[in-house]
Picture 1 (cartoon, rainbow over the protein chains, first blue to last red):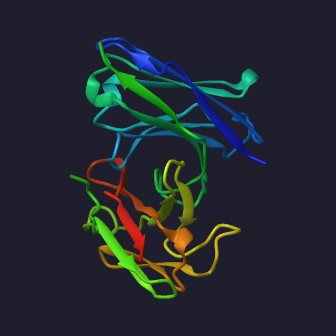
Picture 2: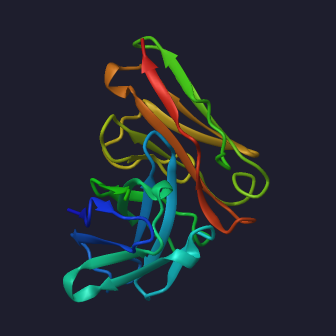
Picture 3: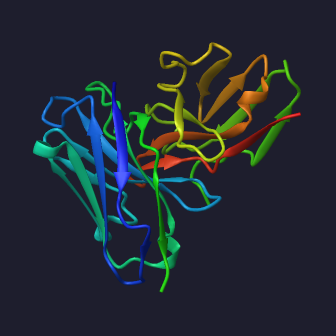
Length: 126
Length: 111
């Protein structure tokens, strides 16, 4: 059974760096075909994709946020870490990590997020 | 503004059929990229409902079905039930933006 759970600060100040951890079980990022992603949702708003990390350690980022995002993995701990620099109140959102149902025959970026964590709410305020 | 356009709300009575549209362009839905659909119940994380345009994950009732044609996609829900009341989102990929894109979401109200 695949599960994911996000953790991190609930409150950060403007200009600070946010670090979120996704701890997962039921799969390993060392296994071929495994991909994990981050998505966020501002209050009352739509979903917004942030980043993907592949079993190869390959990474993809949202073009609009690429300069501020870094996604890494700690395979020994089965965790994926997302950092976002220069936080602003508009970054207030629930941040989700999710298992990405990678298919080798699908164009890059074209697969679905099949299992989601419960999300963690982050507020940016001074 | 979302790249994929969904109606803000739809409604239907129990037992009825409703459809939710997702309108894109030649750089996203109009390409060979698939459309996926998610259901988000109040206060919970999104759940994958339909993947690859018209496939259901194990456990999703066959009351939910997806389709794609041209630059649009649709989610149909038949035999509407009270527990279907939720927000629904479509997702695809935009080759011009090089970005995974979501629709703005549709709130389904069961009357």
